[in-house]
Image 1 (tube, helix red, strand yellow):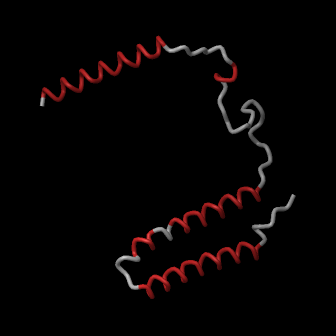
Image 2 (cartoon, one colour):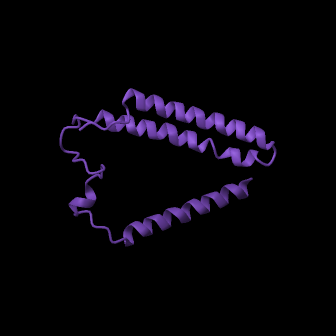
Image 3 (cartoon, helix red, strand yellow):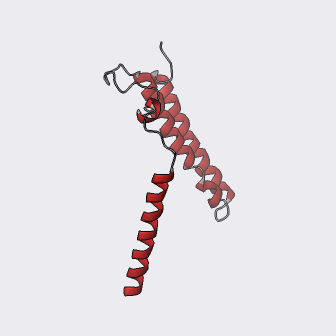
Length: 117
């Protein structure tokens, strides 16, 4: 048990020495304004954070995430094909795709997919 402790201590000391040497020998310049400022997807962090945000964009993003997760739920159907009968696979996949189409129709009917400028 003490051997494991000593080995962990030696590895910790070696890794700290390596990190210290890398930080001393690296050619970083801290004077560059671009590198010292945070990157926030093109937004200027010095201005007000209360800018108007497009609710339509947020709604489209949520719909995309929902349908993306549902599409990933279709992947296990490939694995089930080996252990299930063909009629059960067709029934499950048709039912699942029907639910996806009903959800898509509902979003379309509610006007969530029309982009208004």
